[in-house]
Structures are given as C-alpha cells and as structure tokens.
Image (cartoon, rainbow, N blue to C red):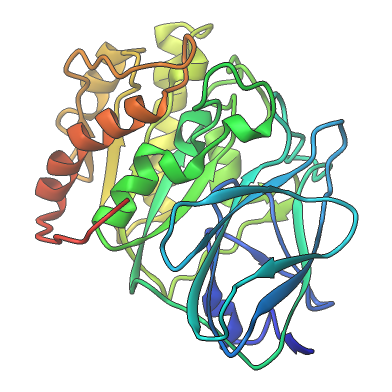
Length: 328
C-alpha cells in the first residue's frame, strides 16, 4: 500500500481545527472537533496508524463520516485500524476527533492527545478543502459538544458534530477552528485552572505556542465563555474580561470579534456594561435563552440545535452574510 504524506504543504490542506505537524511526519492535536477531510478514489479501505494516547481508563474516540453520511463513533486502540469504503469509487471521508477522556482530559500538560502516525491507501488519496474560510470559536466544553448525550458516562457522550458551533460553521460554509477546553473560563476561579482562555489563545499546551495560519481567512472570531467562572465575583470577572478582550484584539486585530453571552446568563451585567458600546467587539445578548440541557450545564443535541437556530440569523446579520449552505 502507499502512504499518504501527512505534513507536506499539499496534504496539510486536509487538516482543519488546529493540528500540529511534527518533524517526524506525524500530526498531533489535543482539540476536540478537529477534522481530517480526504477524497478517496480506487481504494476499498484506508488504514490508519492512529493509536490511543490517554492517561486514564477511557479510550480516545474519533467520529467518521463517509460521503456525508452521519458521523459514527470509533474507539482508538493499541493497533492500526482499517476503514472499509466498500466500492473503489470516489468517496469523501471526514474524520473528527471526538473525545479523550469523559470527565477531565489532561490536554494542557499533553498527557492526553491525538497522534496520527500514518494513513495507507491503495490507489489515490487527496486532501479535500470544503471551504475557503474559517470561524474561530473560543469556548469551553459546550463549544466542544461535550456531555451532549445524557445517561452516557464515557467519551461517547461527547458529540462535537452536533455542537451549536459546528452547525453554525457548516451553515456559513466555513471551517470550524475550536480553541476550547472543558471546564475552563477566563478567571483563576474557573472550574479548571490553568489554562484560562487567554492561555489557550496563545498556546495549545503549556509552553507550546499555538500556530494559526494567517493565510486562512477568518470569517469571524466567536467567543462564548463565562459559564465556568461562577465562583468569581463581578469585579474579578470584569478584570479578566477586559484582559481577554485586549488579547483578542492583539491576536485577531483584523478580524470580526463576536462575544456571545453565556447560555446560562452568567455575568450578563458585566458583559453589557463593558461591551455594549465597544467599537471593535460585537456583543450578542442572552435574551433569556432556555436551551435544553443534558445536565445543569451542558446542552443536549436538541439544545445545541436550539442554540444554533437562535444564533444563526444574529451572526449572519453581524457578518452581513447571505450564505445558504446546507447543514446536517
């Protein structure tokens, strides 16, 4: 079988969602919802040397879709795996990182991560670029689609393919780049600290600089944070929100920045006092949203679709976007 070059300039177009290209030819990410998109021709199967790298009992999972059918969850193990394609005709293969551990993945210290070493094929395999721009989503576990399916107590509950932001990026014909970590917020009193959002804007792991391809057009930078900061006072949150906005303007100074208030209404007055009249940041106010939840914080599949349906016209208006792309 032939081996697909993972890190060449041409092949790298197959990867969206913040992958790190290693000198040894492998690719790494600790993001949920990161994607690989491939066009297969003349192959009855693809073989992935993609093994589990987690510290706990949970196995990491990926989601696979062939020819735009619904994503199916696969558990990574200790050996390469084969993805059967059936016929040797042309196929669009989309693979999305789903979960590392269920409760608390140790991604900031790179104890948990996804590492793809190789893809083997028989005839032809090419990168597939579906869109010419991306939306950067800065958030937490809700942005990642974590714990979407209630009553499931392993990584299968995490469904980034059903998250409100994935539905939004698909509807706006843009790649989805999540900078999101479960439990994180903007203050030191967030459920998980470190990192804060400021940390992961600039780094993908502790001491590891996050590289963002500035040749890719950013359609928008969309922020949804604050749910995990309930232990902070309004003054503490205000101080941290000011710092976050300053860093957003430094990193994404030429891009449209949209801040969506937390879905649970946390710190609503702080957001509106600081950002309602900011010339460089558009604020989306929480209008007493009541999206369906799978627990006290996370959204169900229906809840994510409710959020998407609510936010899509608002975001389109702010972007003056007339896209009518289909979504699933």
